[in-house]
Image (cartoon, rainbow, N blue to C red):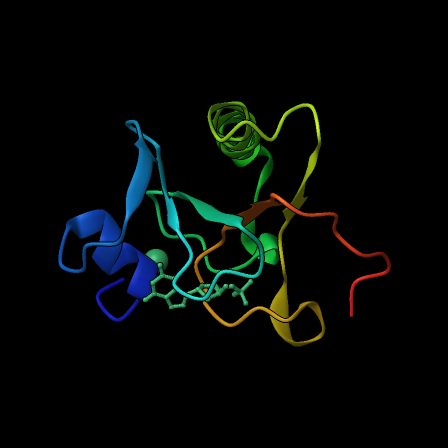
Length: 114
Ligand code: 5GP
Ligand code: ZN
């Protein structure tokens, strides 16, 4: 997807602050952090929204969560806790249409979210 911001990051056209990378997953710090730690974990393959996931993506989506878990440990969030969020479409507040997992931590997260 040539016009997708996160695909441009995967392709190296835009260089975010990368904190994790493997064959399938890229993670980088959010440009506009909502918490002391705010990392976005994305699949390298373009998937626009959660609605576009198929059963074949089960392993990939699991890898996103496991990468977030690893990063939470590295950022020393594991004991205090943290939040993982995926937004879908307008009511979910999705603004970038390449799925991503938000890893948020370093302060207590409110509930319910706004
Ligand atoms: P969404 O609202 O789609 O769930 O989350 C998109 C996230 O991408 C937002 O938290 C926003 O701050 C982040 N974002 C938007 N543009 C950029 C960018 O150019 N670089 C980085 N690192 N994050 C971005
Ligand atoms: Zn994309």
